[in-house]
Image 1 (cartoon, rainbow, N blue to C red):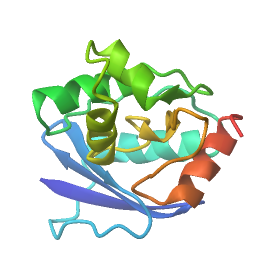
Image 2: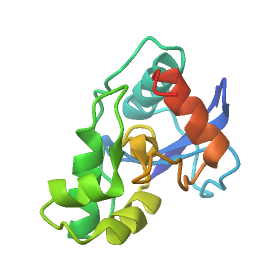
Image 3: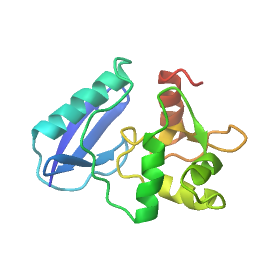
Image 4: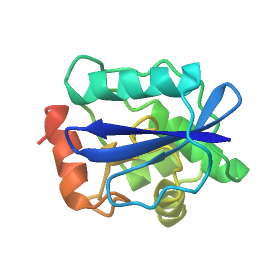
Length: 152
């Protein structure tokens, strides 16, 4: 396991990888694990794509991701990954998309536990009434990411 810290326009972010996949992204203000620093090709490419996204030059990520989670969480994260750039979904819409129409709260919990935010775009999930709801990096960061995508 290794980490790569990069300075972004939104603050310092830390990518974590294991082998040939990205397994975590720590947003500004989040405490990254104390593991060896490294510059593996996948982490370097992840940092490059992240900076391109934040500069408005990238809408889709092309990276090997390996988020650790339960089967339910992985279904939710797959549904999040299918939300196109510049669009949002509600927790209820995600629940219906994964075949669990009454699981909107569980979807919210899976969203909260997303270990690779931005790459798995949990910031694109909003409340049923269109309100911005919780985000691991804070609502201001969520607002900035949605503004970047032209949603707000």
